[in-house]
Every structure is written in C-alpha cells, then in structure tokens.
Image (tube, rainbow, N blue to C red; front, side, top):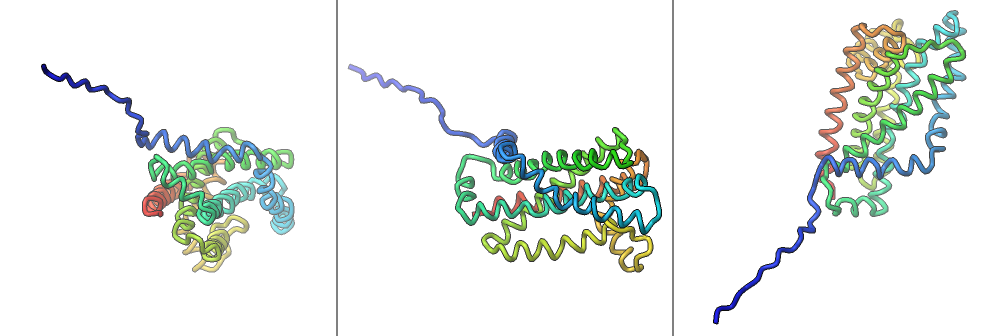
Length: 266
C-alpha cells in the first residue's frame, strides 16, 4: 500500500517591503496630527507675521518706497523664512520619538528604511503651502500683487527646498540621537548666518565684499532671489534657474544623507 502525501499550500502572510507604498503610509501617518490639530500651523505663523508686521514698516520708512513695492521685495523672503525655521527644526520631532522609544518600534516594522525618511520629508510640503498662501493673502490687501503662474511655481520651489531642508534636519536628529542640546546647538549655529547671508531681510547690495561673496554660494540666497522674481511675474529671470538648481541639489543631498542615516539607525 502506497502512502499518499498531500501538500497544502499556505497563503503567503509575509508583508513585503514596497518603498512607494511604505512612503505613502509614513506620509499619511505624519500628516494625521497636522489634520487633527491645524492650530499648530497657525501658531507657527506667529514669527513670520511679526516680521511682516513690524519689520516691513521699517523697510518702508528707510527706503522711501511705496508699501506695495516694499512688500513685493519682502514677502518672498518671509515665505523662505517659513521654510527655513519650520523645516529646519522639524528634526526635533524625530529626536523626541527616539528618546521615547517610538522610533525603535517603527524600525522593526515591515517598512523600507528609506520610506521612514522620505515620507517624513514629504510631509513638510503641506504646512509650507498652507502657510505661504496665508502670508500672501494677508499681504495682498496692503498692495502686494499676486502673479498666479509665478505663485504656483514659487510654491513648488519652496516645497522642493523644504523637502531637502527637512531631510537634512532629520539627518541631524539621527546623528545627534538623544543629545537634544547638540541638535539645537548645530541648528541655531547654522540657521542664523544662512538667514542673514541670504538677503532675506535686508538687501546685500551695500554689504561688505566678503559677505556678498559668501552670499553667492549660499543656496538659500538663490532661492530667495528666485522667489522674488517668480512672485513679481519675471519667470524668465536667471535667478529662477539658479534657485531651482540650489533647491534640487539641496533636496538630493538631504534625501541621500537622510536615507543613509536612517538605514544605519538602530
């Protein structure tokens, strides 16, 4: 008598890594707190609004130009400031998760390591767009003119710039780990010189030659110049090209460094 062995096929229950799907899942997970508590978006506008309300009148008084012309120059810098201060500090959220153990649980989840970084970085686009639109609409009644095509391209440029800067902020958090003082020390040491040397608040035309030389290699300076040209409707300005080059290089560098750091994270 021959024994018959029956093999039953079991369903494959292993969750396989899918970078695109995993990135989407991480992105939606990161956006849920923002949707539940949109007040955080409004609260983070306090600093840009203070600069817009208190610094812009000083520029009007010192330059002698009409309010509308001054805002046309100043508002694009405020939009870049939103990205610089907002996404530049977002790594602190990841650092908090590392200190509480939440990050460790995501590392053992069946997700592509790269998606943990890319999804977080892409999340920065939503706050950037919403906050930038609010600032533009606030400045509009005071003489700021809106070029629709330039505004759309400008918001896209800010989004790319924000993804790169956010990725670098997450990289810094992964490198400093639970040393919160080190994260903020490095972040603050870098962010203010970059802000001043970008011509964001004051023009650098009369600055010392060494400051102008440093500003030419400051990618944020070119993003600011590109935003000014775009929002003024000067889409063919060469500064627009250099702004896109700077934002794309920063995004690629930030994502590369962030993904590399995330894969080594433990």
